[in-house]
Amino acid sequence: MSESRDPRTRVIPEATVARLAVYLRVLTGLADAGRASVSSGELASAAGVNPAGLRKDLSYLGPCGVRGVGYAVPALRERLARALGVEQSRSCVLVGMGNLGSALAGYAGFGTRGFSFVGLLDADPARVGDVVGGTVVRPVDDLEEVVAEHGVTIAVVTTPAPVAQSVCDRLVDAGVRSIVNFAPVTLQVPAGVDVRQVDLSVELQVLAFLDQQKGVQVVGEQVVLP
Amino acid sequence: MSESRDPRTRVIPEATVARLAVYLRVLTGLADAGRASVSSGELASAAGVNPAGLRKDLSYLGPCGVRGVGYAVPALRERLARALGVEQSRSCVLVGMGNLGSALAGYAGFGTRGFSFVGLLDADPARVGDVVGGTVVRPVDDLEEVVAEHGVTIAVVTTPAPVAQSVCDRLVDAGVRSIVNFAPVTLQVPAGVDVRQVDLSVELQVLAFLDQQKGVQVVGEQVVLP
DNA sequence: CGGACTTTGTTCCGACGTTCACAAGCGGTT
DNA sequence: AACCGCTTGTGAACGTCGGAACAAAGTCCG
Image (cartoon, rainbow over all chains, first blue to last red; front, top):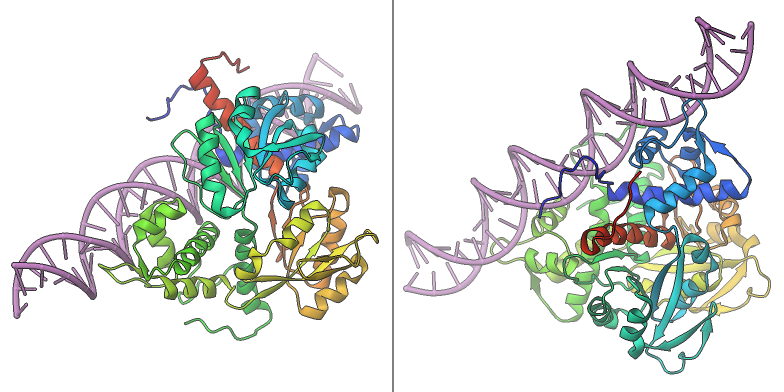
């Protein structure tokens, strides 16, 4: 139940993992530009974080820089990719080929970031057979088959909200252990399954709140607090 | 520069604000179902959080429940909407009408959640003039005009990565203070402007990392940590 | 009318994350 | 070969966040 205190197993905080992914993106850009090395200050600036925090994040992977010089771009890039588990491409399925699903499936950037959609599923027969991003859309009934076929463990849900939970249940039963959910519902999953919720409405409402706070200070427009 | 310590102004943590938006979504569903009251336990279960944490979140708004009974659904819903600043609809602009931008602009759910896209902008002349979700797409050159026209303070960026920063700069110059960015780049903004980054690649990579960790525990496959 | 049960609101505490500041180490230079 | 400047890596303090236990308060029932 409790995590082992094994000092050899460095536990990496989830917040750090998310930032490592950002560093990896920045490093890929630097590598494409032909840069050989970077300092923590420059990397931190490009990633929008504190330099000391960045160094601490990287230190979870063990020493990977050279003092007085900085970090070797290609080596650090590969090390981050290995730590994140995207060294070789990982297979994903995407359920729900509406506008949003089609947009995600057609985005070429995932291939270069270590992910490939091996299954695109939709319940609408009119959409089945379409080719999006080089993959053919299959009926949602093939869900279990596709997951088993490729040993998929990661799924993206872009279905309408009312069916998201049932799709999620089927995915979990089929063996999927990690889900990104774009439907505006909170998915109920058993322990051991990770869900990351992406909800534009929530993002907008957080901004609206911050905006409102700023509005009081900047504009001076009266805002009645009950 | 520093926040005022005014005891009347309850400072609400950003993490709490994000959860309040989730509670609001759940409450709207309950209201549509005709429910009159809810307990913190039921709300917390539906939102996927701890009941005690939920009560603490709500307590930032002041007492809003009845002991021994629970929370009145319509009253709490309205109170949350007011706290988040989405009591009346807020105007937003969306820049970049590719697949993703079109998907977001066409999603009807934002209207019911207090947001309306009063401006849809794209650099491609072939897309200008299209009607998405009832709004006509205008050239990106109209950006400053549209923002000023409606007093827009919130923007959504769904452009290709290379132009996201320049679009962001123009938005900020035009007066936008809150931005949701879907482009896979870290936007540089002056102080006082809030950016919320949404990056599916990052979400997937975090899941890949967690997935990999689970794989070590379950499968027992050796993973060499240098 | 009083007591007991239910549910909220609050307080306390432990853990986590972030930041600052300093020591350690490497390269370049004289 | 030794020194100096630069950058990494780490240790410690601070603030924040999340969870659990407890007290307050209102309702329902006998």
